[in-house]
Image (cartoon, rainbow, N blue to C red; front, side, top):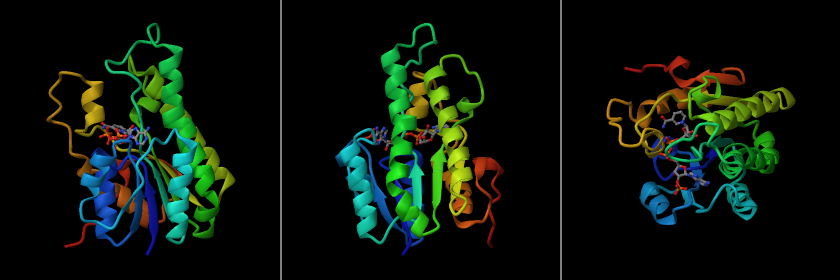
Length: 228
Ligand SMILES: NC(=O)c1ccc[n+]([C@@H]2O[C@H](COP(=O)([O-])OP(=O)(O)OC[C@H]3O[C@@H](n4cnc5c(N)ncnc54)[C@H](OP(=O)(O)O)[C@@H]3O)[C@@H](O)[C@H]2O)c1
């Protein structure tokens, strides 16, 4: 069975993708900081829950070791992410500490986890899926820390793709989704018109199971094969 490591799988997009891959027979290694929420999210599936913070090197090692014991990761999804602060501050108000924490979670941790899993991914000729955002390319006011972190993640994605032609390496912008993170970005606002994260999953599956070349994609632009 193919093996996937998905960070941030206790809710939102990570949980929706984990459920879909579980239904397709993948072996999953999943994390989140809140162990109870993670256990509840994986429910009766056979996913291995490894609670922890992606910023913690020992936790990342535990993720890699768990995937290795299952035969090695075919897929790494760097999905766990932080906005930095809510409400989101202007650059004039952004503290070095919040910027630094945002870069640690959204850039340094995905790179470090990818680096740890690289031998496994190369052995399987696997796939890396980095979840990015339109904030990586659009100058939204207040999105400085998060936007800069996702822009850096995009560039890590492109460079890893150039350095590792035997892997498929994607950055995927899922678009707006009705999740905790999105609510934190728009505190007090009604976000009920945003699509559920499950609507994005078929596009992610099309990337994972398809043959598109490495690169940056908007999920909505990845065609989904409709079977009747
Ligand atoms: N929602 C949107 O509109 C939107 C738009 C564009 C891009 N994105 C991207 O889509 C991805 C998923 O976002 P989402 O909206 O689904 O977020 P979400 O609902 O807030 O879920 C985030 C998940 O990541 C986990 N997590 C956060 N920080 C972590 C850490 N340091 N270590 C381990 N796990 C951590 C959370 O659990 P714990 O808190 O328990 O750790 C949770 O399981 C992110 O990369 C986000 O930047 C979202």
